[in-house]
Image (cartoon, rainbow, N blue to C red; front, side, top):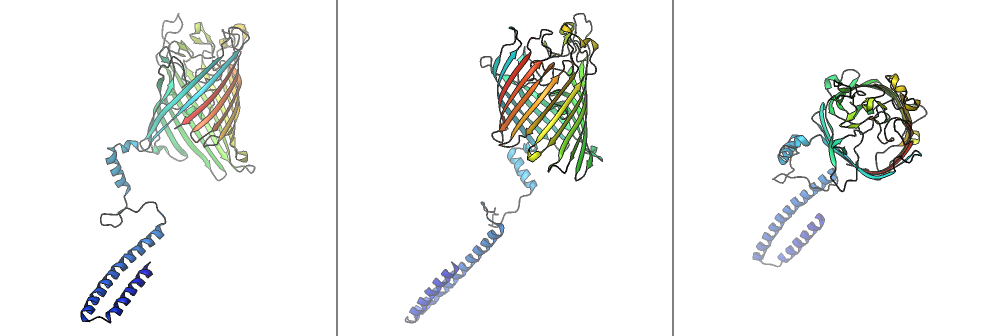
Length: 490
């Protein structure tokens, strides 16, 4: 373009000069003025061309961009905004609430479920089949104030019986009661302190938490002991330790101590009692090791977890401390003294959990084995009507193929469980495994597929035999339960 403009000006000058040769003196003066004006215009055009060339070179250096660079009032480039300037401007725009929004994390999920149940015993008084539609809604946040302190709060759906929520193992709500409004409860409210001063030597982290929180003992346990909806109340301490860290072996260990409140308002138990029983607490300990190591047979490392737990349910089995309002949470644990005592008299459960994760052909695969025993079982609990032995042992074995993370991922699970009636506390283990939680054995099959990154389709099947059938008024021998879920995470 620059060459074309120069060529055009040269032509104009040439024509002008040739005409001037035939003109008189006055015309020469006019032409001289015209030439000077053209020279000035050419100078201005030269400046414009130089500016355009400079901008082109800058764009070639920066690369393509969809936005033009900010400019100052004088047309030059604007100064770069510092982080402090940005925070100050954001704070003014938000009225100071930016300090609260920073490190604030919201999360939740909605689950829609169809559930069908079928029972069999050969008795005409057996429980009738049931078909129901249910939902679960959970929503909450965590606020991190710094790298040492955070708080959390969450709400969840649930159902009441007699004006009280009587199921710590379920956040489901059944579609029922003539379109009546549904309940929402506080699921979590906690504070966590992870002091930096505790990071000494092999100690990676010390975690101190109080309130109502996600169960820390799920780490080295299965639903043989804990339903995943249970949220303990009280306090716990957890310490993570790095023992070995090499190219081929990474060995970590952890220790958890929990002090949980079960029942604070002690009540009179049996009709003959004259003094209220003591309050009930749960004191729990768990120690685990987690070696991750490479083998010459697999491309990815083996991830192994072994944990031992001890649960002391202090005074839980006595004088109706296992009641919520007027509802018993014995749930498969046999009772005595008119239902005011648990026949086991005491629960001091020891659990051993082992899990290994491998990746054959890139497929995430996990195997686990969980065993629990209640050595504190009273000798009086070993017999009941019909001479049935109520076992104090429980165990489960299972596997999981695949892993749910992103759209297109799938997962399949299988598990077999045997839960003796006096082995574990029936109030807190898996609520879907039969009616009564404990005193059961059977199979669990689960399949799931991620339709999108936030939407999962899942199905579950439970085939459960009742170990207590024919005793204590227990009728049903077997329960078959089928569930179909759609879960949205947000």
